[in-house]
Image (cartoon, rainbow, N blue to C red):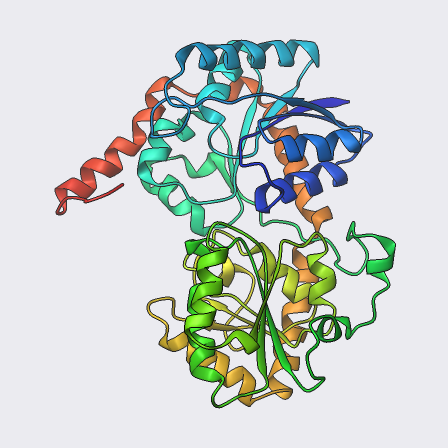
Length: 410
């Protein structure tokens, strides 16, 4: 039995990286691996504890880089000491850092204890963070898309020590943890729930209500479309700091009758399976596009930006309509095209997306690939050491940018 210490730094919610960690732990080979989790996320800690997973809750402090609380050296050294203690207490064979931040102390913990370290990155990190968080001190990095590997490789991170493993997506028809009464909902329940006519053309978008997710772009596009498509409606699933501002924008654009905000939902897949006609995203950035893969498994036609990891698993004109993410005109064009060519185009896109995602992005495939990384780093433990000078690699990128004309912000 191999004991794996998972270290997760994040906000107090269950979203992309937390969801991926839960799914990975759920699908580990339980006869080969025993998970132990150390996190600053109370919600994640409670979720894992409820499933009898060894989980430790702590306050995490980062040094420098503009994070809060900032530069609490005493607490930072306490984290190093606690990490060493956990490795001894649980006889840890390998460390899995589930976000970039814990690298700042776990790289030192791994070096002191001689424990193999794997860092999984679920998002891109700006130059400043790649330096202050010490991402290059990790001897093995796993990214969830090729798109977020580019900056690390450009810094000089060894390609032989980096693996791209796409996120795994559970089968939405069987793996949802929603109450049983929700799992038995009829296929057309969403329109009835929202009190919409049966002929409504209903699109869903899912994500945190933050600038990066671009819901404001969808609202502006919707305001231009509804005069031509009066039966068009958008359901927004998610919550966040911009909720009130987005609701005010809906009023300003006079599209209140065409938009419904339903807030955070624990049974997102049930909403996508509940009679929605299509899925649309206007994210300004997307490291992988987990909700887009979930929409594919729900057999929905997808309109999404051609950015980040999205085009790594859906293809324009074949399994989705991908729009140029510079400006909003192409978003409008592709959304119109899907509406105009319903239902023939929508069915073709949905079938192709489902076939690819269900075949290539299963949680089982994801878990086996990550287990293979564990086995490799444990077996080659002596080869996994990294020089402290590796932390300086981002400086090369910084100097190169300065040389070609300077940078305004990193």
